[in-house]
Length: 313
Ligand code: NAD
Ligand code: UDP
Image (cartoon, rainbow, N blue to C red; front, side, top):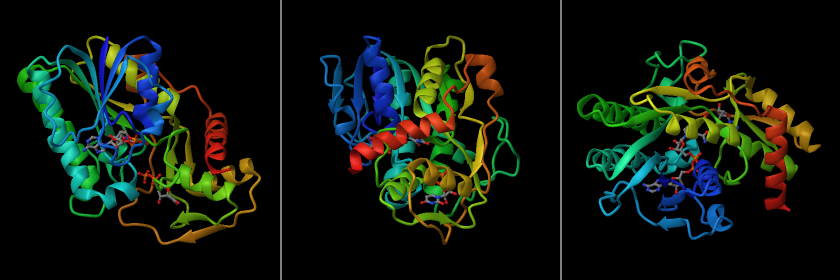
């Protein structure tokens, strides 16, 4: 199989690249290294891995052919990163998705999985979040560059599906963590582990009562590949995430304890529109993909802490 992974040098993309290489697939990564890292792919060097250093908002994929499966992952994902690169984020998710959809329409690619996000639900008024919920999103706030461009990306994909019967599938990914997250990308799991390992203050934004549901990356990769490989799912939108919900305060305490850290837990100002709660309803994934996460938070955090320890010490 010939696989295209945009954003393949990033956290999730590097695990997905490894997964497909281990199956003997040929993997083409398109990445401009805006938030990704060559080191994530360094240990995967193989004849079957080709890295194309291009920006998906400028590259039209037209020199490629015979791609069986494409994953559209190219976009900053951490709030710190997308607030730093808001225009790049909007262009990656709009123009970048358009380029992939045109390549799909012209049969350069047979099937595309679009990486969307739980952020399309915004600060949700329904809990847990089901795929049929339209969300509660601020269209003009500091998270809008990400939330609205991901919503646009979904709309673009669905339009190609409805108008041209293009084979697209949309994954609404909920907070995922694991090795290969950048130490300084600002997400909560990487921040807390780094802070705990260095005995620095663990920074909770707001009162820590906001919730998230954390999925280990190997579970997510399995879900994404099933969404890609299962026939008959064209035009489907599916939540992928782990429904085990924790408050941010609970997460800080768990990590502090696991690391045996002397860090203080401190409270800092929270950014605008930070969702107060988030948990996926994964009934659709269970039914259509026969998938559910297997890795417990404790096991996943252990593996992630080991990885960060090897990077810090
Ligand atoms: P990441 O920042 O680690 O990886 C993103 C990759 O995309 C990086 O390698 C980056 O260099 C590349 N990229 C960014 N803009 C690009 C452009 N214009 N052209 C080419 N490459 C570009 O993030 P991640 O956590 O691996 O997320 C991957 C995808 O999954 C993103 O689309 C993200 O929105 C989505 N997602 C992730 C999560 C999560 O919890 N990790 C949750 C929801 C959705
Ligand atoms: N957060 C925090 N301290 C940090 C980083 C994040 O309290 O050092 C909070 C953040 O305000 C949010 C949650 O943790 O409520 C998850 O943040 P993250 O940036 O990982 O992703 P989000 O789910 O907001 O996209």
